[in-house]
Length: 245
Image (cartoon, rainbow, N blue to C red; front, top):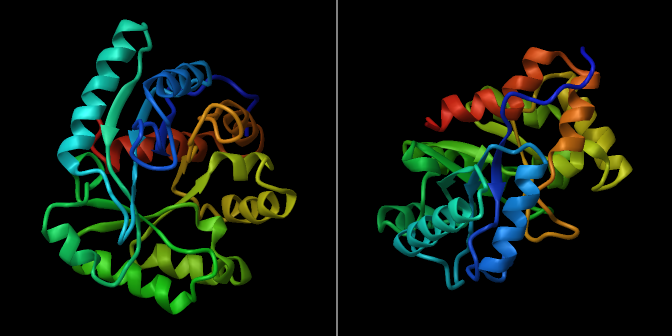
């Protein structure tokens, strides 16, 4: 453990900064405000992960890439020194493989990694099935905000199993700090003590209650846990696994 110092980098592996495509940013003005907040928080890289849900009007990979290019340009013009990458946050559904094969879903930064989420009350069998489906597609499942799933909160050995079979475990920064509730913080602390967490994202949607904040999270982590492990979950794992340049 060490006193807090600014992390060398911080990668936000999960955020909704693309404007007007889901329930995240509602326009470029909002996006720029989110980016300024992220920069002030010490975030250096952001992976845009717009929602992909069955039956919804999901942004296409081509349109998403175009929007991200516009974000890069506007960020440069504003002097916001951040690096941006593209993915999706996919709400698991049974025929996700078909949608992926049709080119509708973005892997993270074009690598063989897919950010996947489930409903909070999904049964463990469905979560397992989703993880196995993603793996059968030749991809590594990146499990979004593991602390939200009631079946996993009841029994952390299930999280150990998912990690053991190859799933990457992520939590939200707000869950680390207690901003998502005391019980959630206590649960995540248990995961951190056992080094079950692989990465952290903000899951940012706006500039108020769900802003891209990680500084408080980093301060807490460096004050409580091994420095090398904190470096891994704040930036090293993401840079390596997602091949971030």
